[in-house]
View (cartoon, rainbow, N blue to C red):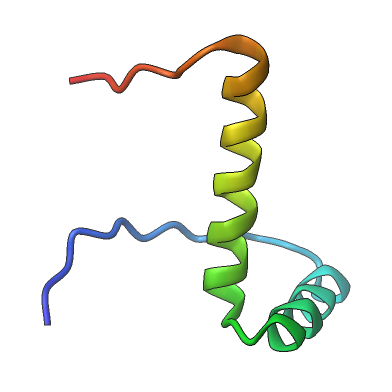
Length: 57
C-alpha cells in the first residue's frame, strides 16, 4: 500500500527510546504516532510565538 509519508531514520539512545515507548503505550499509541504528536505540538508552539511557517514549493 503506497502512502505519501516520508521516512526518516532517527538515532537516539536506547534509554530515550524505551521511555518514549512507555509513554506511547500509556497513551495508546505507537512510538511513531507519539513522535508525530510531539512534533505537531512543537510546531504549534513555535508558530504561535513566531508566526506561521510557510511551505516551500
